[in-house]
Image (cartoon, rainbow, N blue to C red; front, side, top):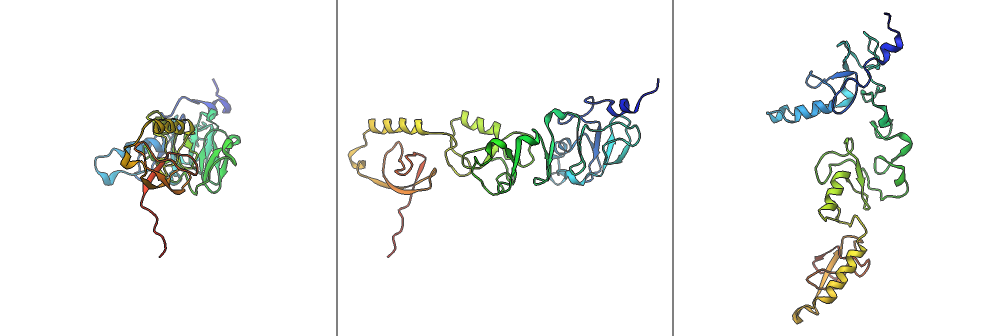
Amino acid sequence: MEVSADDRFDFGKMGYGCKHYRRRCKIRAPCCNEIYPCRHCHNEATSVMTRPFDRHELNRFDVKQVVCAVCDTEQPVARVCTNCGVNMGEYFCEICKFYDDDIEKGQFHCEDCGICRVGGQENYFHCKKCGSCYSVNLRDNHSCIENSMQHHCPICYEYLFDSLKDVAVMKCGHTMHRECYFEMIIREKYCCPICSKSVIDMSKAWKQLDEEIEATVMPEEYRDKKVWILCNDCNDTTEACFHIIGQKCSHCQSYNTRAIAPPVLPQ
């Protein structure tokens, strides 16, 4: 029975790949000349090599050769296999050398980021100052920090810019993995690990501290003691009454403060 070109083109769709991507090809890593299902499989395999100097990561842009998973033909990077005519990826980016059959992810290539993203291009915009794609819900609604995604997650230390995991943008503008963010909140850590600003509305907690301080009388020798504090939330420096429970910022009413040395007055 003769097989049509369309049948060959779609043959094996969603039937090949790895835990990271459904695709009908493998890649030859130019760094070590080995064949892997995808760059993440390569990076995971090389990261546990016994000798530290053997550990390395694959640059996606350096990939020149792919191997068709259907007919096992090695060939230059292209969407369609030159031997069997199968479509090696329903989504294909020639720039990133990226293949994926699962197009429900909404893959798109961001020219400004220089890499492919998922989630649907209509749902994201590129923030020039932050240097990354953010949800359209954050357009004109976030604190910009230059190249805020060009660093490692402060919790798990995985590089954020091209991470496969969802990223949370905190009130202060700093970023971390969404799962790491929620883990931090569950453990009752409410300050940004980078700048120490509060990441959620703490007004109810501050009110409770007001009541605790009012109900907790300090020993007489400490009642009139003053300390200088720096507020992590508003960055204001002020003098406050010392209390064992905490010192309140007179500017923004936050208890997210720390004691500092008194300012040096000019002579």
